[in-house]
Length: 330
Image (tube, rainbow, N blue to C red; front, side, top):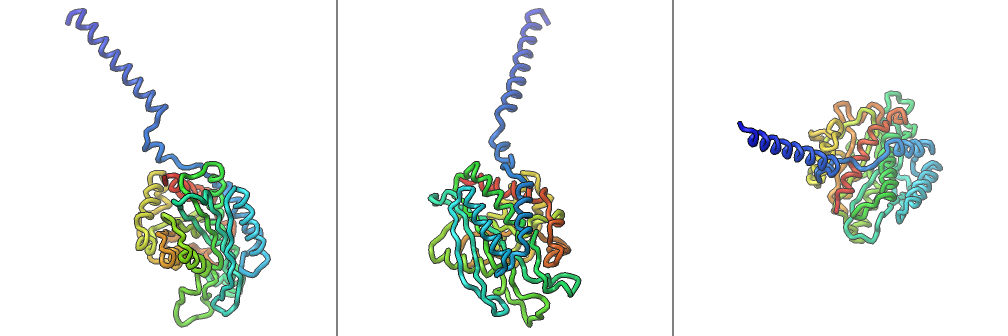
């Protein structure tokens, strides 16, 4: 090879190397659209945890109790402080035992003028009975509801806080439904299971929403989303009514590295608030709910459903996935 050939080769190598360096630098400062898509939305698990603790500090939020009234007032004020338009739906309802209570559903709307909307919801009341407790003496004690109720509300309050900082492209409605957990207790030994004694608040809300023509692209229900050992399989009614939304959420979770929580396996049907939203309001709604081989957790419907069974890390993961899904909507 002569000197000219060597010089040409050297020049070509230099140009090629420069191009590689240039491309590398461009990739560093200009991430691809896919990389942007897979960055989790800003969310604070510690903030969500503090919101859970605040609810628990009121005491069990059983309908008709002082703690229930105080917590409801705090929830409405907190949502208003984030700039949401807050409306309350108050109605008289009857529970399985013939008692009458005021059901208080609270909904906060972000960008209420936008036609395209997403619905996020959780129940905020507490079960009056620890009827799954190993100790019969605890059966008629109310549940603190740290995981069963407060965890979902805590995540959605942090979602609301983030939406006040960075609005979504679509309208977002955050709904806290009441009188979800007043279903017939196990110690009543009813002849047959009656699903109508559960999810009373969501039935009331869905009926009015359908009558008023409320629409949303989809809904996401959060129930028991704070356990340190949480796992979220794909619930049957969610798959039946809103399989595409399940795929949307679980795919996002997979891309964010949360597949250890959002499991790619099926779960049987759960009587929960999303059933009412699907069947009555006609909004495709899924349920993110903890379930494993041992059921809903050893503390479910027991006096042990307290802050010791809530993890800021789990709240963080769930919140990142849900908020990222919301921000993806255009």
